[in-house]
Image (cartoon, rainbow over all chains, first blue to last red):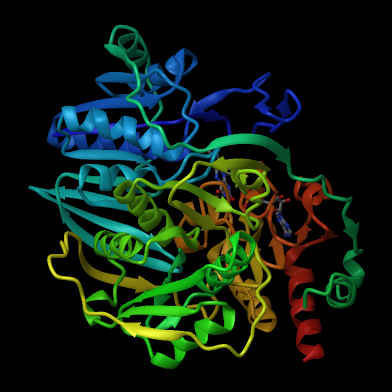
Length: 245
Length: 321
Ligand SMILES: Cc1cc2nc3c(=O)[nH]c(=O)nc-3n(C[C@H](O)[C@H](O)[C@H](O)COP(=O)(O)OP(=O)(O)OC[C@H]3O[C@@H](n4cnc5c(N)ncnc54)[C@H](O)[C@@H]3O)c2cc1C
């Protein structure tokens, strides 16, 4: 089975978000970058599938050279080879077109990615790739089993879940509990250094959005504490002061 | 020119987020010059339900009344919407940011060559270019994004517009199920949560964390939620340990909620949990530890033992009814 795993290179979930250059650039100073947590689930699932079905895992990231350490982590966790599309991933359609161009050239049985990136949170890349390739796309997938040519999936819907079957090839936007996050072992880390990482230039994409400026969430005022012995007072405050009851 | 709104429903009931999408579309229509707002509903709905979309600004509803569409298959829905984008010569497509919008909005964009912005939190600004504001970094910041000429798709985050209602009714146009659709996905079943109030739609959420010690103590959370008409949520370790179902898990890697009131009980307030709740209007923390980080994010707090405080709050809420 040939699996393509698309990953994002994003700030660690504990990062303090700040902007520079008159709020036009994300401030990377002191930021630790990681594989997107949802993408990490996708990768873990790919590794599980490879273990039980054999096959090959290619990891793909659209990003500039600074994303390579993150890609090496994915190779250490269990991907066999990597492709970096040398471009700044600033627009969903742009990223999807890069993925689709690669998937058209090289046929994959399964394309896995996170349900969304945790920086721009758009969550639409799986669908765009699916329609560009004219194959089914499903997200967010919490469970995935491959039986022959059929993918059996559990998809989260608002307040519940839905069970879906499709024929391969398929694209899945992943989320927990599809698999448990995997940690690279020493052997993986060593071998990742020599696994192939190919760099290619992006395909052209003309109609893309551009980010003009950023703004941080306004800081909260300080908390109003109610002594535990008068806990009931909270309800009065919520009703009369905050007016949310 | 027209604005198309993709309606999301469940068993003949239109989701609140789709009503917000219709209203967003009609307000946007006023900004960009009186466009026709066409809502598209797929599957079985009562006529009255669809006519009432006029209350929120839809001028017309295109209805494909076929029970084959009662379950929202991603592929087929996207194909139908994409085709209607062409036939109605829409220049803007609006839907809610949800699992429905993510899947279907993305596929329509791929199919039609549209540009797309997700998680939009305010009406567009068209004074120079077409600019929208979106939520990024899981609620920790916003970006202002400009969109290129041509067809645009916006996925609107819930509670981003305050909906006003009129008595207007929409005109309904019934169209048949298009031929030659590919029903690629087979939906073999589904499971729904039992609670009365869905987490995503809730105005009030009562959420419990590891501080509650075990699933047997959730009656307390449910009682308070019931008294408030609230939905119940939880932190990640709580769903990881199977104390609560996964779809209640709130946060960075779970459901992002934006209710009027979020009450966190025995939740420490890790940054990943806060990422899912920071667009709530009012945050309340109840925690035994005065140094719990949640108190830094909360509007109101009680430092105390949940097992003492929560039942008393429930009684107090009941006494007001
Ligand atoms: C990549 C990543 C993504 C993550 N995503 C999420 C996410 O989406 N959502 C999420 O929730 N977490 C997420 N986490 C986990 C997060 O970091 C925290 O571990 C988690 O939120 C802690 O859950 P908790 O507050 O229930 O438990 P704890 O941190 O153990 O806190 C329990 C709290 O209960 C209080 N308490 C104890 N007894 C009582 C009592 N009797 N009365 C009142 N209070 C009491 C304690 O003082 C404590 O503050 C993520 C982590 C990572 C690394």
